[in-house]
Length: 267
Image (cartoon, rainbow, N blue to C red; front, top):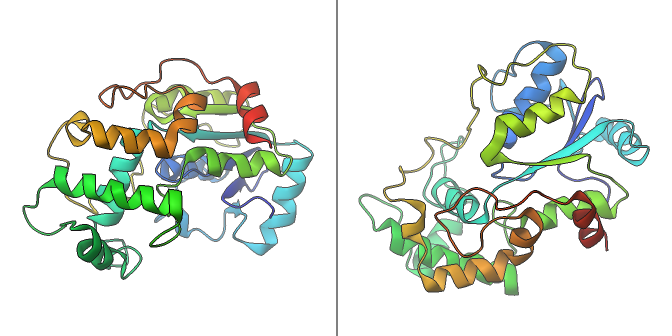
């Protein structure tokens, strides 16, 4: 299986397990800058040089050696599951992607037909999002009408592949406390070019893809929605210490226990 979704600086200073919808664009650009003294011109997900990625065959033996020998500092980042699934809806379901098309071709028409979701014009964001949640739950629980997408499959699933294949994380941080968490990473590596997190741009590559969120986050989640989110992401809430009972509280309620994460995701 190897290490899917894993990026590493060309200097091999740091290894990062990508978790979609958890500031991965900004994290990748910070890694790129730390080696090259400039940001990648474009979406970092498109970079095929200047950053080792598991998706690049030539990078795989280098990443595998760094991970298994633990010669590089290793980290990932997590996000409140309520905010993450809502962001996935606005970006991937409502939004037009950077190629000018809908995400995954026929998926949105399928959602319109089978789940009654609307994405055009002045649609009811709350009603459509709650219908999308039913679809997301169906993909995660029953893998119907399709397998779950990486953008709304559980964070623990992404993060576990690294551990199962003999990787060890040195740090997992909250995207809600991005500067603090990313600074810990930078403090633990030798970077050719120092990065000032207070002044760098945020590379939110999904921003502008979809409509603006019209309501506070808690307005999108009624009792049924909260039940569905719990069903999909209970392990994420437990391991990464977010408030499962209050969608309006985006901040974690405790610190992540790395030993617990490795023990529970290493099976």
